[in-house]
Image (cartoon, rainbow, N blue to C red; front, side, top):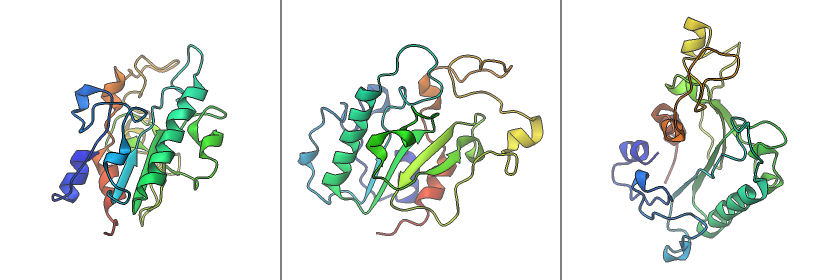
Length: 200
């Protein structure tokens, strides 16, 4: 996300928070631990959040879903949004099945309906249906992979090239995408489309 934003706005200051050191964040810690008040209210023009998706994801097929803890992380995200009051904000999360998908959770009940899209329309070989809540929807509707609007792989091969899960998808010959890190990046094409009309 940061790379795509810098390409669009090369003079922008980007501040990132991530507990995983692999992503070289400005603040290597969880948002639960992070002290947001080191930045004044109104400091950021754009706020992008990706709450952990594990418990909401339809890809989670084993174990008990820790939805209360996951909702607490999302509530923290909303508190950060309330504190910073950015001009433009985005909250991204894979689209899960009811009642476990984030779009079905009470913690998001006061938010506007999310935009829906599929990563495969933006350059990936896997579908990954995704929700994006935002204050600044793009001029063109985001694209979902459907029978009426199939992605390139579906048009050419009749299936996606691989799944966004770690292992082989049940009932399908296509391979998984490996670890979660392999599907962590947001497609650059999607980023460019979302950032195209932002005004400052």
